Structures are given as C-alpha cells and as structure tokens.
Length: 345
Image (cartoon, rainbow, N blue to C red; front, side, top):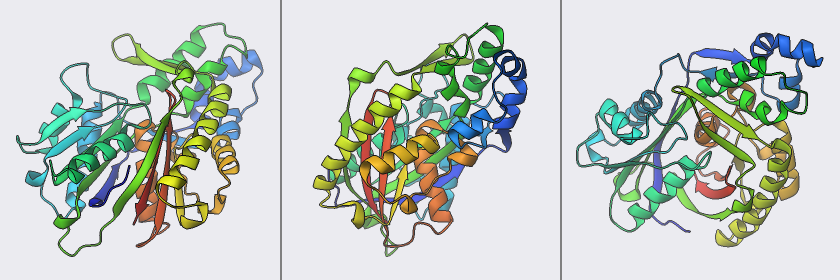
C-alpha cells in the first residue's frame, strides 16, 4: 500500500499516574516465588521491564481514549468539528455493544457527522486504523480522521496474580501466564488528515507499508474475558518469539520492495514493545542497527495497541525523531499479524 496525501497532523499520549513496578508485582507474588524457589528480580531480568503504568480502578477504555483524543486535538491545528472519521482501535473495550468509539466520541465532543466504529486487531489495531483512515483520505471519502486507542491492562495483571497465587502451579505451568505480567496501561491518539489541510505546516507523511499474516500461529497468544470485570490470557512466549520474528523477516522483505527502501534508508525504527529479548532477536534477524531503535518498554511495559504509537510520540518529544527523518514502524501482534509502515517526519 502507498499513500500520497495522508499525514499525521498531531500525535499525543495519555498515561496513568500510578506506577506498578516489577518489584511490586514480585512482592505480591512472594508466596509463589518462595514455594517455587524463584529468584527475586526474575521478571525485570528476563524482560527488561522495570515498571508499567496502571489506570485507577474503574477507568473505562473510552475514558483513556477520550483523554488522549482531547490531547491530540489540543495539539492540532484542526478543529474537532472537522473530524469525519473516528476509530477506537484498542484491544480493550467498554462492552460488547455499543462500540467503545460511541462513548469516547461523546466524551471528546466530536460532531454527529463523524462516522465512528471500533477496529480491533490485538497489538496492531492502531496501525490498522491508520491505514483505514489513509485509504479513505486517499480515495476522497474524508479529509480528516481521529484515531485513538486506550488500553487498560490492570484487570489482566490483577487476575493473573490472583490465579498464580490460588493455583498450585509448577514452574513449567506458570510459563503461559508470565507475559501477562509485562502488560501496562496507556492511551494514544492521532489526527490524520489530507495534506491540503495543513495550511503551510509541516507534513508528517505516511508513505506506505505492507501487511502479512501467519494465522497458523493464532493459538500461541489468546486472551478473553474472565468473569464480569477481569481478563485472562495465556501465551507460549518462546514459540511466539520464533514465529513472530520469522513473520517479521518475511514482511520486512516485502516492505523494502514496496517502499523502494532498505535498512540504511531509515533514520529511526519503532517496533512493538515486548521486551529486551524480542527487540534484540528482531533487530538481529532483520539486520537492523540497534542504535536506530527507540524503546519505552522499560518504563511502560507492553501497552498492546498503544505501545508502538506511544513510543513514536515519546521519540518525537525526546528529539529522537526530527523533521525530515524517515521512520519505520514495525508492528506485530497475536494472530499472528505483521504490519510495517514508513513515515517521513
């Protein structure tokens, strides 16, 4: 896919105030650690994740998405009434029906004329929503969209700790639950528009990208609701790493052909924020320079669909992505699905 006129006009995040460290999690899991003789510091050592943020109890995904959406509009040169498409693209939703986008739409104060819907695809939802908005902009259906994602990992982390303490698991039996403890919370939003609306402001262009799927691995990471308010997820982390990196390698080859580029043509890479091992293996396999990476997983954990775009926002705010830089967004999510996009900032 290629885009000629699609731009990210503004990008903003909303992060919870409460910090939950890996040490805090291990302290709550002390009975499990003592019974299985697990070494203290294991969680941070294996993942590189020192802490993550969690929303206050009772925070709805639409609350988080709306907070980020308002922040993106506050940074924007465009007005809320110009938004013609609104997409909530997170894993987390307020309820099955109506769309979480409906609640966030009201909380942000968007116009009644804006088409709205949810788009969910594990950790790739936000990037998928960018391509949907871009396609509608390129075709002339709309000129301005607001894409949001609000993830609330607290129920999953809390339920996982409760399960691990309640069941007499062996060391091997706790493995499918380990990835749950890396999950964090946050929200992100982008105003996406046709470049003609920029009125002399710099165009942060979405150049194009490619997507690939390897759905034979759809059983490797599966999550679902657990009772009224809790979540449950089990992951074969080792198999997921191998299959995910293989899919990323295949996607990377297609990506370079589609955008007429190579590793050397990028100034910065932002990949999905899983942890140290995933990042190192991905960059080694794709032959990318780790010095071009920008990561946030050490302090934010894995925020699902929010992770990659929120990390892009952090890189911009830190000056690690500058005007004119070419940025590669390397997204991957359970399913398995991979989507890579090129930006010219």
